[in-house]
Every structure is written in structure tokens, then in C-alpha cells.
Image 1 (cartoon, rainbow, N blue to C red):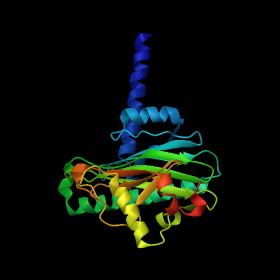
Image 2 (spheres, one colour):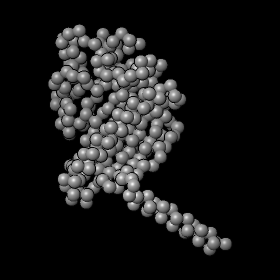
Image 3 (cartoon, helix red, strand yellow):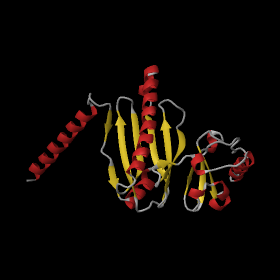
Image 4 (cartoon, one colour):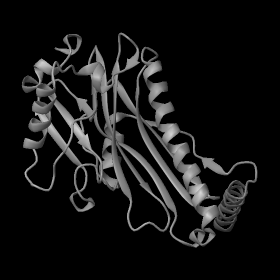
Amino acid sequence: MKHILLLWVILLLNACRQQSDQISTSKNKHILSIDSIYKSDSSLITELNQTSTNEPKFIITRDIILDTTFIYDKLHLLTIEIILPKTKGKQLFSADKLLNTIITDKKNQFVISVDKMLKDEPLLKTAIGSEFIVSPVELYKDKHVLSYLLYIEVYRAGAPHPKSDYFSFNYDIKRKKQIKFYDYFIFQSKNESDSLLKLINSTFKDEYIKADEFYDFDFNFNEKTINFNFDDYEIASYAYGMQRATIDKTKLFKYIKAEFRQ
């Protein structure tokens, strides 16, 4: 009986291995995708904190789940891991679809750049592979808005180090549209925009970290604070990493458009 059971296990393992080999050598698909995995918020937060390199920490609402997609592109030696928030139900399907489209476009642009790089420098195929990683940092939802902050890390084979960016997705639930910087903020004069720039810089404790000019900064928010987010190299050298300026909403109230003052 033991021998029969052992034989059955061996046959099962061989069948799985053959199926895996067939998938890995498929000529019809260059990008091999595992189906999206839906998990409850609490279990996925635990998994993220245990396995993610950047260790995202956030409080997720009961109205949001996380959708994890893992892709290995054998042709380009490219690993893609995308963890995106999704709202429960169909009410905010348009928001989920828009966010997915934006991130998919970023992913596709990166794949194209890696493809060109490998065609120009074929020897890089022997180097460590490239990576495209997206994971959540902060997620906020109320009855009026969504505000997500995502971490995007890309690495191209042969590069000395990866590059990390922040990407915020702010969404007006009633109007069903993305909230850009000048949709949310209003400035009556250059003095007001200069004042905000000064306030942002006052949060940085190192003299070598500084935003030199005012522009439409990446930002996300919750009920109490607004965060201005800066990528690698954006306002400081790579050694200082990514930066965030967190400011109490009460200090920014006069710059927030009336429809978003809560």
C-alpha cells in the first residue's frame, strides 16, 4: 500500500512538472500571468508586512480589498508584482478600472523599455533580471473621495540600483473622475504658492533635502493630513531616498477648494 501511495505521489509530481514546463516554454505568450488572487484585507496585510521589501504599513478600510498579480516574463527575464486596492461592489468600478489602466500603462512602458534595452545590449540577458513592483503605502476612503498612495519600484538589468517612485491616485466619487493637483488646490497669488513651498520644506530636517520650485506635487490625503510625496532624486540625492512632507489639513485649509473642505 505504501509503495502504491508513493508511486501515485511521484506520478502526480511528474505531471505537475510537465505542465509547468509546458507553460514556461509556451510560444504563444511571452508574459505568463498567474490569476489575480483576492484575499481579505487582514490576511493580506500580514503577508505584505512579512514578504514585501519596502514593508508597507497602512490601515485599510473594510470597503477595500487588495488584488495581487504576479507575472514572470521569461523572454525579458522580468518579474512583475502588482498589488492594487480594489473597492468592494460595483459602485466604484470606474475608479478601479481607471487605476488599473494607469498602472498597466506604466507596466507596459517599462516592458517596452526593457525589450529595447535587451535588443541593444543582448549580454544583459546573462545579468540579474529586471523588476517592476507596485504596492500600496496608504489607502483612504470616505463617502466623497478615494486617496491611495502607491510605491513603484523598477529595476533594469545591469543598473547599479533600483529606482523608487510614489504614485498617488485621488478620486472624486460623486464626479467619477481623478483628482489632480489643481483640482484640489487653489492659489490666489504667487505668494500663496511660495508659502506652501516654504511650509513643505519646513518639514525636512536636513538642509540637503529641499524642493527648489513650486509645481503640481504628488499628494495624497486622509481626514487629518495631506502628504506631499517626492521620488528618488526629485528633491535630494539618491542617498537620501524618497521623501514625504506630512502637513496638518488645518494649516492648508485656505489652499483647499471648497468642495473638498470637510
